[in-house]
Length: 385
Image (cartoon, rainbow, N blue to C red; front, top):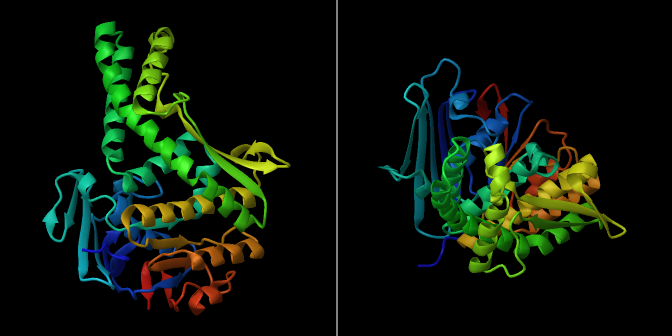
């Protein structure tokens, strides 16, 4: 059977999620522009759709924070379909703070392992907070890589979860002053799972670094930038055996310092995705020297690459969630972003803006994405369609 061309959200139901008491929406296949003031709930609406992709808040909020004030639990339900094929999918998610229990179903059947439900939709979330990926610390960029790869690379999520579990136990053993024999057991497991993480991250950055440079130049109007993976363990030959050997050797070299500090000092948890702007071919890190517009340009380029990754890895077009995507961009950059979005092979589009007069909003609503988008308004958790 051919892979589906796109999954679109046709129905969304929320109960006591963020500022929504009750919400039932029927969404058009092309999508909608949702206009509302800050605090009206427009970002919460996109967050709910994206929650059914990753089952966590894209804003980093704990599940308890997603429950409406004075409510006992939240419930999110989405019905999705592929307009070009006989394919439908219903996903539900609920969380109850009292029991700390999260329940997820696929087509009515409970999911035993959350990893089996993650990444079914192909949603890509553009948000003003994306600037933190570029301007923040290395952990922000590792988080971006880990989410993209967990959703789109087979086996990555399992390897990452194993690595984090082993790392936590190894750090505990270091703090407890465990013997070398005990640490050796954790070393082997750390190297095995960490090698998978390193290889997948390196391969993705190598594959998409040229595209990042191209997209950055297109959005900026010609300015240059690049993307590299700064790995703590990076042998010249990047094969699994060489990475594993280099990782093990690195652990041996830092063993004395690790015992002194009680923490693991080598591995992919210390890596970084480096983003540079090139001024007369001299690289300068965007997180340190980039202007607001340059940082925002890089953040949008990363999301566009994520959308391309979804399409390539899953065989269907992504559902774009664009939360005030033109914020902090001048008009020329905004228009170039719009052209790129128009040219990309994507599916449904849900776009938010604080007011009708926002830059390019009329063009977006007038078929900027290939067909007209409905215009809705939102206020105090209520949507007028």
